[in-house]
Length: 459
Image (cartoon, rainbow, N blue to C red; front, side, top):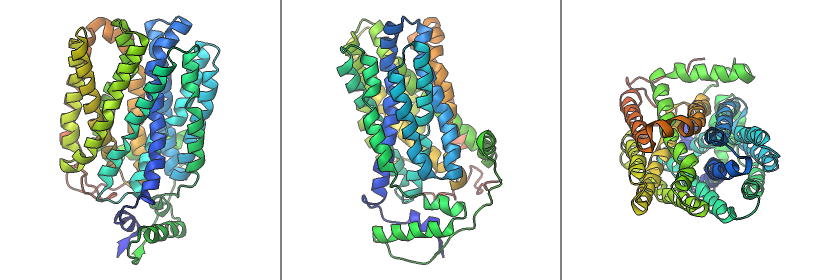
């Protein structure tokens, strides 16, 4: 007899059922992209507004990304403790609130504090949204669906770039850039209230009747054949709350499989650092090379827009070649394309071509990465496993804009900095090839570790 999990993962895909969750979850992810991309456009504007040094400019992205790192851990743990649905709605509400007050900041210090707090709210979107969408997705399509989720990222980053480019000549431009995204974020918060709780989460936490009600409703609305199933026994929750709960989830994530978790963290850190460096500093790099603010913003926007095509290709590639091959080839190529951009920076047409190559290839990598990490962990720690990996990358990437602008770029030069970054990415994907399993076609909660043995989650 099938389990409730298997019933959900064997359902046919229907846009009016799972597709609704995919779209609403993806729109939240779009705001995450918008906010991260906004750091790059704010950096030169705030530098002029407050007379900032290069290291102080780096703090614009650092404060926001560190806040997202805290949010990724906090909301991942909350989602595993109190449910996906509740966390799903609150993340955007907190983000919208502190973005509003951030737009009114009277000085640089207050601005940094509010950007940090907005990041705490928005940092929960990715782990919570990916956990929820993945748990409603049919297993045969899960890779494509989770990879397709990332199409919202370049859409959000591109919309941010278009708005920033249009607002660049307007007095008080950076305040308007923050204000513009508040209303849609609040509307999305309201819409999210109608999303059902994950039946996999309900089953794991002993809420069998609620889980059955949602599973039966999904079966009816997708037109699947009704059949008997069992709900697997719940695992007793002996955990605590707050910081101890987060640390307890961290222990579970590492005890699940140190090799898998180390690969997940290193992949997240190196790949997302590569992307965040480009996104946070590209307008400033182009302005330093003599471009106007308008031209620098427009070319950065082109970099993100090309990524939309990359995401669409990744949705096919993830099932055609598998997760590990897709990441293992595209990640080093993306990093090397930044080195190509730096080498030809004085030849504007060639530099723009390399920038387009980077925008396309990095968005082949990131969707597959997110789908892959979300699949590596079982339901009980999926949001936490993804959240901690995301948090590790946010912390590292949060300090990288500061280190990049204050140390690496001035000392190594732009080209050698990107070459060194590409070498680190290559080492990490080689570790992934050894340490982590391929998840293509596997059933969630029954994905094996590299030794071929099913890895139990210990409490």
